[in-house]
Image 1: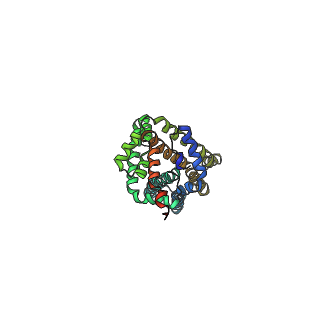
Image 2: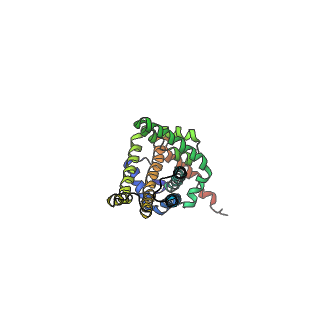
Image 3: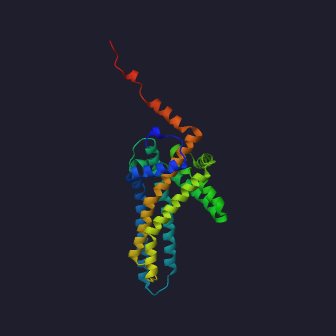
Amino acid sequence: MGATDIRPMSLGEVLDRTFSLYKNNFWVLAGIITVPMLVKFVYLVGLEWFQRAAIRGVGAGAGPSIGMLVTGIFGVFVAAIITWVLTSAATAGTIIAVSEIYLGRTITVKEAYRPVRQKIFRLLGLIFVTGLMCGAGLIFLIIPGIYLFCKTALVTPVMMLEDDDLGGSISRSFDLTKDFFWQIFLIFLLVFVMQWVAGMILVVPVTITVAVMKMQTIPFGLAVLQHLGEFLTEVLITPIGTIAISLMYYNLRVRKEAFDLQHLMGSLDVQPNPQNNAPSVA
């Protein structure tokens, strides 16, 4: 996809370009999310091994001690922190990569993460605040939570691509998504269904195996396979949603702010004038 293809898109065109961009740039986009998700996978497998080793150390028949419970809770808390940090970084890196590809440029995994490192603390604050907003809406009233989730869908693209602050990113996301709630909702719904199907294929068979064999605890090998299924689901499906939201960000800027004309004028400004570079004739 080149810069000359910047134009208003319908939802169908956004999704079509999403899958086209995903297919044509799979290794870069998958590489961006594989690095952090691999760290998460290794941690979860290590936590699984540590907890089982602790149980064996006190005896298989003994009940869990307070120390083991505290350690388990702390391990889950750390896992949540790791997921928050790594997922935020992977999402931001994917947005940077999609932006460069959409504007007709090339990018590597390392280059995609360079802007993320510069804004990581501001990014984590943004994800935390918007997560609290959406979580509160889901807890008290489901529909307002879904509404906020869709209205804040563009906060990360705004922060990463426009260098806006936390409050400005949220406000601008609300402005850009005005009148386009249902299109963004359908994008999230599609990604949710894809993740559910992938989970059914990659994760659920382990659960079924445990149920059929009537195991009281999941063997370590099957637990690793379960984490591996979750890892593959994240690597294969998560970029699709991020690509679609990134393209929707540009689509709304084109529709509401004539970004296509701004980009065209900017590209003309940086092009050298052939007459200035022509050799003088004596």
